[in-house]
Structures are given as structure tokens and as C-alpha cells.
Image (cartoon, rainbow, N blue to C red; front, side, top):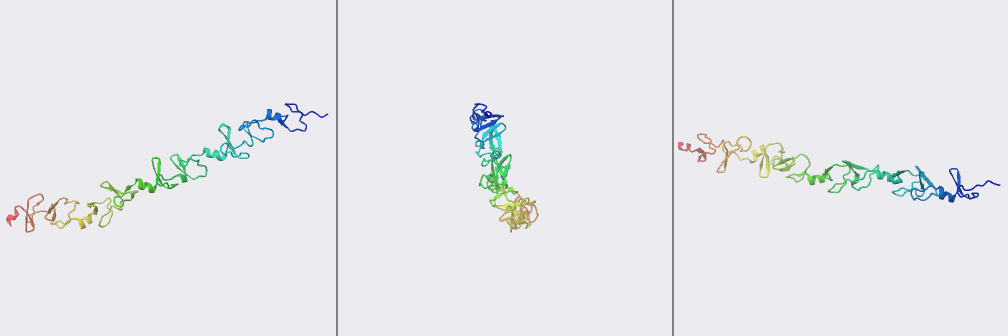
Length: 281
């Protein structure tokens, strides 16, 4: 007689039948599925004798259940991570979940993506755009204003001071005259075109003149000394009489040379005299 070969649990004979050996014991498929099979951590059903089983750290899955929790890609023979709630994730989804989020599109910035960082914020390179014109700034120059970012051109037109002469933005340097901003190259002498920044000049209506050009082209000539009457240095006071002008120190009696500025005088034969000298002529 042959030796009996029975199922350890139900004692049914196993000769000529499919059976499973576990922990040194032989059992029929039915008993294995009912008593010995591990439970799939994903679907919560037994992993029967006819199923392929995967295990990791005392956790078990059907091979068909071993998929990425996020994208459902099969992870059989693929790298994976066991994350919160015992869920398995593929390497791509793990990298995306752990990656910083773009402040523009809110999608993850994964390794290899070109990005822009500013004050602990990060953008995809193509998501970092000008708040005004919406063009990509990328790795170019920009100006932050609160929560907005502006390219150089938009910042100039939106925030830079405008030159009183050419009406274009003043991006650097410049000067101020009578509370109006000017480019240095626009604030020039109307005659010789030299820049007047930091130099003495005179304004005549809407024109500006350097000292030399004002004396030569604009200033009235003193009827006494024939020199220009300017506001530079000596001679800031002017005496005007019948379409002629004098420095105050040149307006004096023709005979006695007494200064007549703010004093009574007499005009005789086109000459200026004090009140006393005409009596002596």
C-alpha cells in the first residue's frame, strides 16, 4: 500500500490533485485559499493559489493590484515608493509630489526643468512673465513691484519719470529743474547745445542758455559800458529808460559821475545828468 498523502486541513487525499506547500504542510487549493492565503493590501481579498503574489515589508498584493496609487501604472518590475496609508507610488509620481510647485501654473517643477527662483518662490522659466505685457521674462532682467514683476521696458513706461523735453522714460541719471525731470542730454543750451547739468545757466521763457551764449545772444547791452547785462555776478540790478538799459553801477551822471540808480536824474541831448549838473552846463 502506498503512503497516504492528504491535505493537512481537510484530510482530503492529494494524489493526482493540485496542492500547495506552506510552512512544511501540504494543503489543497481550497484550504489554501480559505486558511493560508495572504490578504491583498489593496483590494482586501485573499491572494489565491492561482494568483501571482508580490510582497514588500510584510505587505502583500496581487500582481494586478500592484499599481501606482496616483497614475495607476503597473509597478511589477518597476521602482516604487511606499508612502502614506501604505500606498505605493511610482518614481515619477513620487518626484512630482515632492517637487516644488510653480507659482505661475501651480504644476510641479521636476528635476531637469528650467526654472526661476526669487525670494523662496519658484517658476518654470516659461511661466515667469511680465505682469504688464505678459511676455516671458525667463532669466532676463526684471523689476518686482509688490506681487507683480515687470520686464525692463514695461517698468520704464509704467514707473520711470518722463523727460520734460523728449517725453521718454528716464532710466538712469537725469536731473530736475523746477520740479520737472530731464535727461542730462536733453537739458542743453539752446544755442551751443552743450549740456547744462551742474553748470550756470539762464532760462529765457522755454529756452536755456549757458553763460557765454546768454551774454552773446540774449542779454541786453549796457548803454554805459556796452557789456552784456546778465544775472551773473555783479550787475544783477538793471536800470531801464526809454528802450535802453544800464547796469545799476553804470547809470551815472555824465558830468560828475555820480551814481543815479534810484535817484532823480535829467536827460539832456540824449545824455543822463544828475539834477544839479544841467544847471552848470
